[in-house]
Length: 199
Length: 199
Image (tube, rainbow over the protein chains, first blue to last red):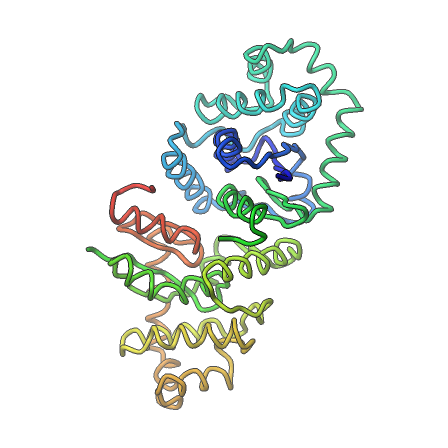
C-alpha cells in the first residue's frame, strides 16, 4: 500500500501519543508511514498560530487531555512535561539526520520517552547526548553533522515542503495531499488511504 | 445514569456535528445530556483564544475536516457556511429560552440545519424567525422574551457557570467537572460517564 507522510516536530506535545503508538499502528494496519521532521514553530509563528501561550485554561486542558489519551493507549506519561522547548530546531535537525542515516525513529521515540515519561526536555543537554548514546549513536559526531548548515537548510526545506502541503501544525498525516491534523485523526488518515473516505 | 452537560454556542462550527448526531447518540448510549447554551465568544475573547481569525490555512482545514466528518456521520453539509455569525448572543438567548420552555433542542437542530445545509446564517433575520416558525413557535413572542434583560442576564450567568467549570470552547462535554472539548471527544465523555476512564 502507498505510504502516508507523518509530518512531526519534536516540540509538539500531542506528537508524543503518535510517536509512541505509530510503530504498532503501522504493523497492524499494514500502512507504511514516512517520518518527516519539520519546524512547526516556524510555520505557526508565520500564521499567528500560538495555541497555548497566554492561554492557561487551554494549556491545563491540553495536559489533562494528553494524560487521559495516554491512559487510553496504555502509555505511561508524566504531565506537565517541560514546555515549550528551548531548542526545537536542533532537536529536529538531529531527527532529520537520523532519518537519513537510519536511526531516526529510534531517536525520536527515545527523545519523547525521556521528555514525557522522565521529564527531560528534548533538544537540550545533557538529554540530547544521552538520548543519542541510548540508541548507540556517538553524540559528538551526530551533533557536529546535525548542526551543520547542510542539515539546517535541509530542515528548512522540509518545513517549506510541509507548508506547501497545507501543514499548519503537528502531528499531521498527509495522504497524497489530503491533510489530517492531530493524533486523534490518525485512524481517519488510515481510512482515507484505504477507502478514500473517513469511516 | 447521571447526565452529561453539553455546553454549546450557536456560532461554533464543529457544534453542527454534535447537534445533529446527539439525539441518536443519547438514544443508543442511554446517557442523557443537558443542553446548555452559553456565549463562547465572551470566553474566547477573554482568553485571547481566536482560533481562525487571520488564519486562512487553518480555517480552510476546518471546513475540510468538518466536511469529511459530516460524511462519516452521514450528515449532509454545505461548506463553507456563513462564518462568523453577526448575532451570536441573540441566537443563544433564544436557545436558552427554548430550553426553559421545552422547544430548545428543536430550535437548535433546525438552526444548524438551515445554517450548515442551506447556508442561512443563524441568529439573523429572516432566518431566525423562519427557524422559529418551522418548529411551531411564534417569532414575535419569542424574540420579545429572548431579547429581554432577564434572558440576556441568564445567558451571561450560564456563560459564567461554563467558565467556572473550565470551559474554554464549544462544544464541551462536562462529566461532573471532567471536561472534554470538541465533537471528537463525545465518545470519550460517554466512556468517562460509564467507566471513569477513556476507553
